[in-house]
Length: 504
Image (cartoon, rainbow, N blue to C red; front, side, top):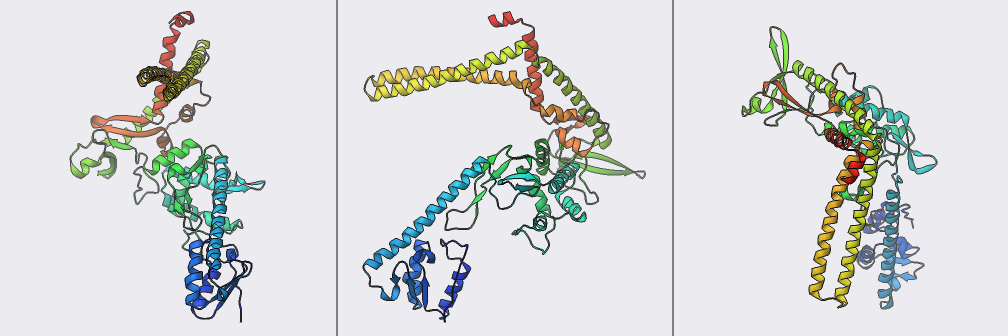
């Protein structure tokens, strides 16, 4: 009686192959006493394990091993040459497998750095381009679901509530959607026969940079071709290609949502969404989170915020403030900030049209480039100086004396370059084509009431002090301050004529 064992599609670098494991089981039960293979490479491409089976495992169970093309038969083994040639052939097979693995890994890395998508399945919200399977196109149906997920998170829903809403609406989870589209998709996350939306799945979508057009690949890999277990790689070794494909979510929305994910935004049991200021209010003195409280007076409920540290330990004072006063103050401050930003925008546009300002940018850029060339010249001089010392053209003392001079001159040029680059950054600030932060505030210029999306988009955090004093730290505060600096510098320069400035 004979039988055939085939492991089609499995690598010979390991022995965790279904048919091979069945072969071992039959050998150990005494059902097989002879194994015949076409050649040694068909048996295994693992030098260590192949030697163990041929020298220990098979002889232990009295199994005859024949490799036809290699002319090997264990029952006719004479020793000598066979003992040398056989391990050598196994070593060559192992090396060949390793070489193929290195080439494949190298090719995949090249594709990643080119921005080619090499995954088996596209990320939920995208499809592989029919004309180029390494490029992705938006799947409008799934993309709308992704947009809703981000929209609901901005509105204050938790990941669990979002998952429940999607299930209630009958929207297929990413796994079920792939199956619906005819893809043979399996996942280690599945527990039930039909995969439902989960808070974990929602969290993965909200954190995935893929949706802003950034391709991130190479997060996991196997240590080598013999070990198939995937290991997480350090983040600095991931391949990240920005603006690689069409985004589904705007970068500003993605950043805002991910700021919310790290804030304390728990939802009260009786509520569907977080409160208006959840995760944004802090005590101005102890920096502890403010907590929301309700007080029933005469059948009417009054809501206020107080320092959580005061409520728990009494170490800090209460910093109590009514919710209505807080909302009115924040709304007024947002309106004031928007008006100030729109005024800044008008001034920046006026400054951009000033010919003198553009000449400053051009001249500063030229001076910076000259300093870079000067720094490179000192580096070349120091290299030549070292070579002169090695060739005994100058003494050790002369070398260190001249090197010290070059070091000082290079340091001076580097300081000048740093200053010029800062000036250039300030000078070109308002000349950028897209001041997105201004447009973000502009879209809310006519607001009459606060909503959760408005608050989390425009405000980083709010500090509450005693006496109902409020400090609001807006988003893009650095950009706003830089714009004010540009305007101040331009007004100073405008007070000086071009002729006078040239003399200075």
